[in-house]
Image (cartoon, rainbow, N blue to C red; front, side, top):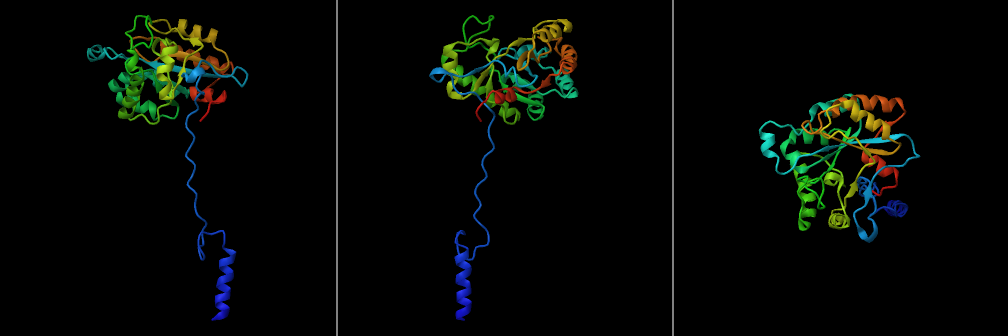
Length: 273
């Protein structure tokens, strides 16, 4: 019996790295959580950071972004038949295999939950926040109603709640101000939400434009490597956008551009996870 005890002792000594003598497997460490979407560091005084375009010298990339606008007060118009969605545009982007970012209002997601869920679960697209109500965060912003100061943060959070209710998976921590209007007070109000504000450097000019050639020409004339292009995903307010996209996409590809999402541009400038 003594030799057997000595042998067992030797085996235990060889296994000192294990948690207990006789254990045959090392302890498993918990896997690291996957990194989150890239965001920019807060600006001076902790203000919400603002992103306008990606790197100009790291390849010919461009982000097409589409604002899915609907205000809190447009429900009656939607009920009467006005269309604030644009399924043909989304189908065209899918057919052309274009990666894109859709900035969606919470009210739009409530009106078209099936489409919001479909867009949010398609790997071609990412959904970002365009407020709940498409009300302005500053005074005198193209005639839009203004969100009261004390409700700016909750307006953003309400939009995210609408996305989750519609079934959008993992909406991005990016926010586009309605009308593109912001000031220091707005950036301060949104800082606790942790979002990066996303503007643009190319205006598509598709709002209420009926000629797709006008929209396509404006985008093609202005786009540069790293550009963020703002267009719209609403049939009633941007009727020419889908036809313009069918011109814009092949021409930019012919010029050597690659379509990316906003998250990819932010990551390319060193956005933190």
